[in-house]
Image (cartoon, rainbow, N blue to C red):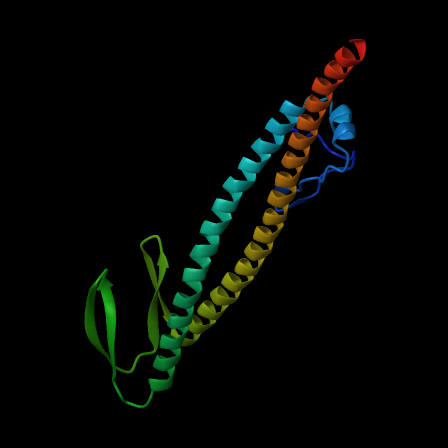
Length: 195
């Protein structure tokens, strides 16, 4: 999103995590004269910026979906570790069904255990003590929730920029249509006055 930007009011653009802020154009004629653009160039610039915002929005929405799926998984893992810790020392075995592969489940009898294996991703699984696993999962859950909050704020900021850009496109287009109509009316009015 690092294309050159004709600014609407002379002040520097602000941004949020690499997403440039859109400027609201108060006066289209002043904006066009200051930026040295014709209406078609200004429309092209803002439509390109709008497309860039849409691409970023798609990426952020994908990240949001991933995090929203990840948080319940982490919470389930925390529950399992808490259950294992609660059963530790009681001598009572825990009967559990677990997914071996997509759609394939197996039943296991878990005896008294001091450790659990956590799947870290990228074909990596590590064995942790129940306490370490619980601490790691709680930390991961806090990080995921914080990341989701930042992502939601980024999406809101992005939606605001999309709205401002769409309004700008409409204002420039409407100004251009108005100017064309005025130019068409002026020669007709002069010709009518001459006859």
